[in-house]
Length: 124
Image (cartoon, rainbow, N blue to C red; front, side, top):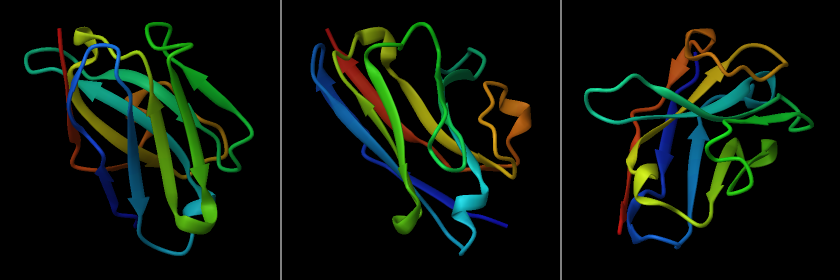
């Protein structure tokens, strides 16, 4: 079982950037595809980005494409989410997730392991 600890959230003005990190426990991080999701209170969890085990394949939600980059460092057991040109509508609780598969998935139910979340707030 893997444990995920996200960090890097904060309060930033619109147009600014943030880099979220998610550190995974355990020696088999490279066996997991990873994803980032976000949720606003009262709304369903929303897919943001995902990356395959090796990092060779990535996928993004249309609403963030071109502004967000997901990457991973398997030597550091860490997945990153670089977010640029942030907008007030990006405000949410961002969670990282892991699935024991090579391919990334856009579906939250494909992920067995979840971090607790890090809050991102973008002011207008």
